[in-house]
Length: 121
Image (cartoon, rainbow, N blue to C red; front, side, top):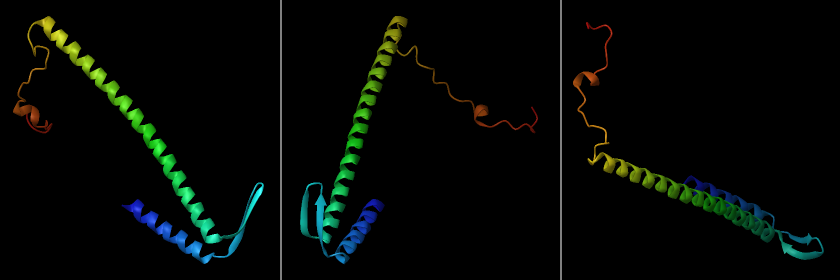
């Protein structure tokens, strides 16, 4: 939400700046010249080109990160599947399903209370 507000404020500032500079200019680039172009148009088109280039660069970074994320997720799934298969194979060799799982013993009440050194042992 903050980014939208900042973007709108910047757009208004650029528009006000462009309207205040409404004289005619000549654009020269290398071997060609374009006389009589409104400076408002030059400013607004320059700002638009900057926004589009920024968006394209941001989108390319996002696509790159998404690809890396997808690759990492598939690698983790493969590792998980291999670990599950190995665990199931070990359970089959022991002969009892769940035999390799950790026992679920209840926690004694004394283990839950922190030790007070000033109390009598």
